[in-house]
Image 1: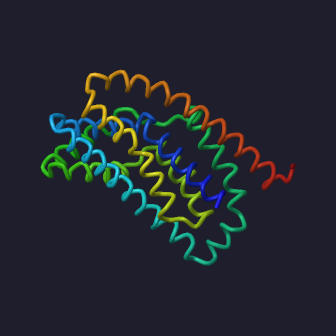
Image 2 (image 1 turned 120 degrees about the vertical axis):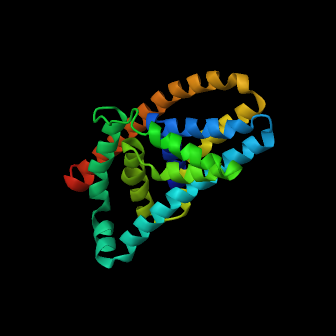
Image 3 (image 1 turned 180 degrees about the vertical axis):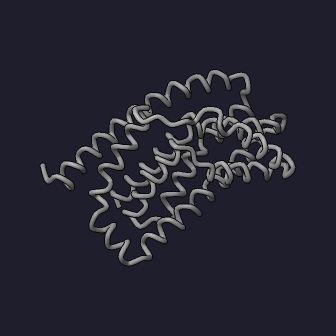
Length: 231
C-alpha cells in the first residue's frame, strides 16, 4: 500500500512537471484563454476547467491502457519486463534527467502554434464542451519533454505496478491542475493572473531541476546496482 501511494505521488508530480514545462504550458495557456471566454460567468469558467481536466485525463488513460495492456498481455514481453525492467530504468531515467536539464535539447518552440489555433477554432464551435476536446487533443499532442516524462517515466511506473488506469489518471489530473487553478483565478481574480504566471515560470525551473537531479541520482543508482552490480 505504501509503495502504491508513493507511485501515485510520483505520477501526480510528473503530471505537474509536464503541465508547466514550456511546450505543454503553451497548450495549457491556450486552454486557459479558451475557458476564460466565459469570464463573466464564474461557474462556467470552473466547469470548463474541469472538463479540460477530464478530457486530458481520458487521453492519457487511453494511451497508457493500450501501451501497458499490450506489454503485459504478451507473455514473453511481460517476462522480459519483469526480469529486466530495473536494468532498463537506469539509462531511461538518466536520459529523461538530462532532457529536463537541457543537456539533451528539444525543439519545442513555435512548432505547434498553428495546430493549436486550428484546434481552438474547432473547439469554439462546441461551446463549453470544447474544453473537454481541447484536453483530449492536447494530451495526445506529445512534444519531446511530455513524451519523455510520459513514456520514459510514467509508463515504466505503470508497468511496474500493473496500473494502466489509476496512475495515468493521476498523471492526467496533474497535467491539467494549472488550468483548473488559473480558471479559478480568471473567474474570481482576473487581475492576478499575470502575477501567477510569473510565479509559475519560476516554480517550473526549480521543479524541473529537482526532478532532474532525482532522476539522474536514481538512474545512476539503478545502473550501478542492476547493470554493473557495484552496490
